[in-house]
Image 1 (cartoon, rainbow, N blue to C red):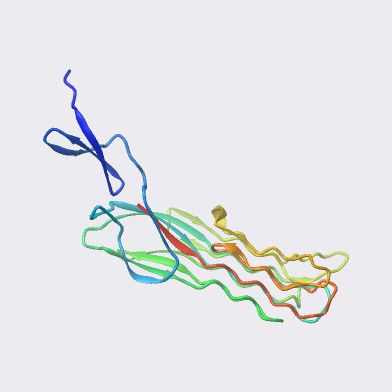
Image 2 (image 1 turned 30 degrees about the vertical axis):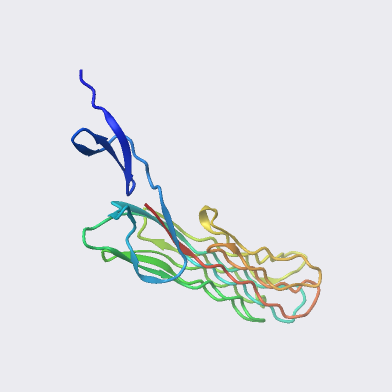
Length: 245
C-alpha cells in the first residue's frame, strides 16, 4: 500500500488543509474547531463577517448575552430593601456563511440603570445579531422594584433563535424586613457564569445597591437597614456578542 506524504498542515478559517504533492486537500478527519474570537460590546450595524488570511470563515459560533437590569431604590421606611435586577439571557448559535452576505447586524442594548431613591431600576437592553434575515437575540433583565412592597425581583431575560437558549436569572425580591420576612435584594447572575449579580450590603444603617460585575448581571437593590435614609439601587452590567471562528 502506498502512503501519501503530507508536507504541512495549514489552518484556514477553522478548517485544516494538508499540503500534499499536487496541491492542498481538505483534512476531513481532524478538525481544529474555533481558533479565533472577537468580542463586540457596542452596536455595529455592519460588522464584517470574520476572515482568516483573507478567507471567510465557513461557520461561526455566536454567544449573545443580554444586558442586566438595575436594582430598585428604597423609600424612608426602616428595614426596606429594593428588588434586585434580573440578568440578561444567553443565546448560543452556530451559523454558516452565505456567499455574498459579508456583514452581520449587531445591536448591543445598554445596561439597566440603577434605580433612583423610591424608584424601579432600569431594564437591561436587548442584544441581537441578524444575519441572512434570521435574528438571534437575548433580551435584558428587568429592573428591580422599590422596597415599598413585597414584590418579586426583576425577571431574567429570554433568548430566541439559538441552538441553546438560556433564560436569565431573576433578582431577589423587595420588601420591608420583619421577624418573619427577609428580603435580600441581590441581582440576578448571568447563565454560564458570564456575570455575578450585585450582592446587597450588610451595613447596619443601610447602604446603596451594589452594581453587578462581569457581563449581563443585575444590580442589587438599595437597603435601609435600621436607618430611614432613602437608598439608590445598583446598576446592571452590559451584555455582549462573542464571535468564534
